[in-house]
Length: 523
Image (cartoon, rainbow, N blue to C red; front, side):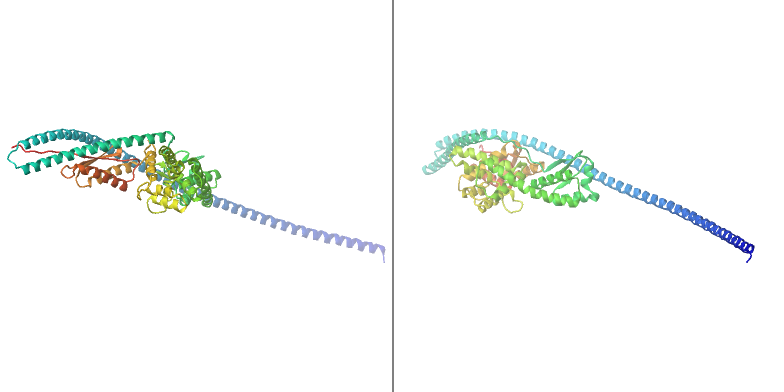
């Protein structure tokens, strides 16, 4: 074959190949450009869609945020309004109580003025009685002389009248002698008793802090009050339910108040609240955990208080249950006086009295320390605290004299030994110390009214007057209804009635006054 032809064919094939390659390249370029334009269009669409979706999400988030802010603002305003309403109500209650106290103070001052006036009136009546007694003695002398001059009577009649007059004179003289002997004996006994009690009291020095029904707990900041209340008040409700103590949260800066008449519960609540504040995790579950833990710890605290009291009183071999009961007395009060401090003072007083009388001091201290043991459980058991305490002492193997001293020191049973008498004396001395006991204004006014009602209810009583701040009552009796020799019995009966009916700090003196009258008609 011709080389030129072959060369021409090769060249033609190469040209055709180049033409085919160029055509393919052009087609692929056009196809690629169309794909790029399609991808760019889709990318622009996706970008627009994403931008629109983002704007919609932002608007939705803004609407939800505004809704949440409005809701939170409404809740805060509602809670603030409720707090303001509570504060207004408490302010009104405090104002009402202050007005009530002012009225009662005015009433007491009025009663004191009336009592002073009645006392002056009674003093004037006593002077009149003395003048009338002198007049009566003079009339009796004149009557005796007139009787001697009577001659119209026979011998038997004159003798009978003379004997009758002599009997009256003898009775009067005998009565005066008896009163003089009783007065001398009473003075001697009181002098010796005062000497013994004075020596016993000199050996101890007791000071009292009046117990209160509230405890103030300091807070680290004002925001703690809101945390203690909790959402919808759930924290404060849980705390009050678990402790049995009222948690008072008011506008007092940096403090809250625990209120309860049960001192043991109040102390438990105080310790639990301080632990909660220190812990910082204030929620119902944590509150329950800490309160239960504090209650267990208080058992050890109560036992320790009982052991301290036993060591201070100097007695030994005490049953563990009695130790616990004595520890509970640390958180009991009577008329504001701490019962455990009072029991320790009675024990020391009885120790001094027993030493003066030649009795066993250790037994005296034991009786004195345990005499109010029943007050540790009297809110669980029925009956007088003296009988409850005696039963507890009997159950835990105390000495018979200790049991009898506890049971009879308020005369719930008959006394048959000296120990309950000594407890009575030491108990009265401890209770009568200035500042040892207090009572509320309502109880004070009520006691004054009850004293007068008891005295006025007896036959023959004309009127009664309570003086000396409720520590003395003067009873005016009708002379034609109550004889002179019946006055001591009436005074004793009134005293017994007051002892069995009322509860009061210290002692109440009963004074019965009878106005003597003599009548004679001039003819």
